[in-house]
Image 1 (cartoon, helix red, strand yellow):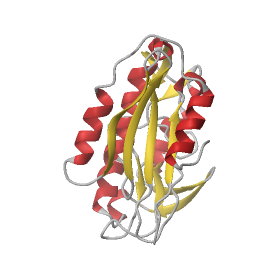
Image 2 (tube, helix red, strand yellow):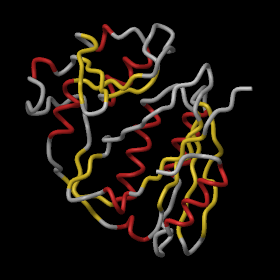
Image 3 (cartoon, rainbow, N blue to C red):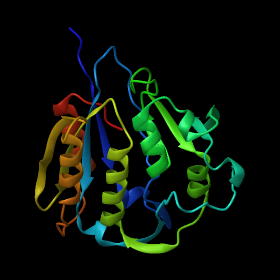
Length: 225
């Protein structure tokens, strides 16, 4: 019997949002399986600390970002991200075989999932040259952490395939509960997940303790990071 391992991602924006935070700078490491979609439970911090403001900038495909790691002439060149390295993948977005990947790369600048003509096969993370330059740029506005987190998740859910995702919210004043059950990213479920994430409200109180996160990971049989 094949068993799909559950990966639990903790969105600890109160730790990782520093002076400059990017609404689309999201990394996901997916465990490959034999035809089994990994389950991902995202724990979303909605404590009072998420009401703080930090500097950010949103990606727009209409903007050609100042050249950083990539010349502006290569804004639509597609690169495969492997750890901290980028390798050439395709000379343009149109050259990527997966239609969903082409849409995500055009709209968000990045994509994670299968890349063959049926959007299957090995999962890869792809960035456009323009998105690489965007990440290298600085913030240009101030926004609440919780709003940035919601934008991150909307973008993330719009640019990934081949996984099943659910969400839990947690703060020590009100404990934890499932915001949405784990769903495959098919049909209307992707839209339902996006709606559920954007419906999360602040609950003013202290952040959840690390021991509670570890306990939740243990109960769900996942990996704690």
